[in-house]
Image (tube, rainbow, N blue to C red; front, top):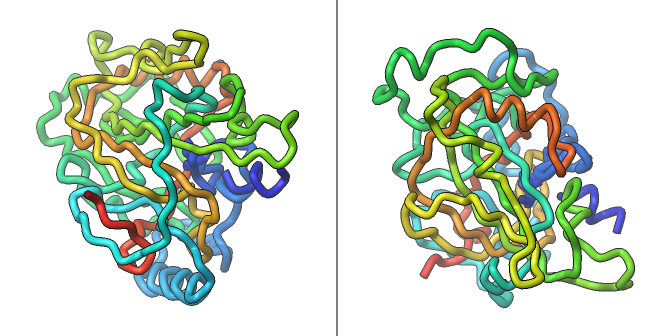
Length: 305
């Protein structure tokens, strides 16, 4: 169980979070929140050679070991050579919501969020992918009067991109903190299936934009915990087999199997409501998590059908 708590949230939704090894899912994830192996503590962006070395270390540590497909990925690139098959998780409506968290900048890449934010600090912050803000108005990009979801690593600003992970489990659980909430500790040896419903948002200074409180609302539906505010107009989700995420997995593979459902289009959300959510929510989340390097090694990617 300890390994589970560390691994996930993930993401990054796992989590995110699910994950995220930065916590990939939550501040409870040491591996998601943890320093990437090789610990770079640069104040500015690290050089390309640092990211290249991390990718090389990931390839070496996973070679011949039997790791399944990894995440995050470019959802517009369907090719993958990882042959380790696992059963796709049920639809989220047949599972329990167990965690919600978000990452600053998208962990995944798609046409609508394809601007590389840069190498970041080598530990998952200031990296990832962004929405093109050229279409936003000056009012939407106006700075806030106070800090939003402030942490030692980042603060949200108008125009920022975030990737939200709504993490689901087949276990008998209820929404809570970190990926640990996705496992039923009373059932020893239980290995639940995991699914992450994923939505990328651009935060704007507009009181008429969507409320993050509503977007993260959850309740029981037919006896199962469900997130009821996930947008239904951001494109058909791309589903694929992958893993938990987070920068703690930049140099080693994640052993956790996750079915991902990533929406390809971006929605706007009122930045002030995101700030309110960070001040108090059922998941004990108060900041954005870091991102794992985009996985581009074909041997670590599943084929998207």
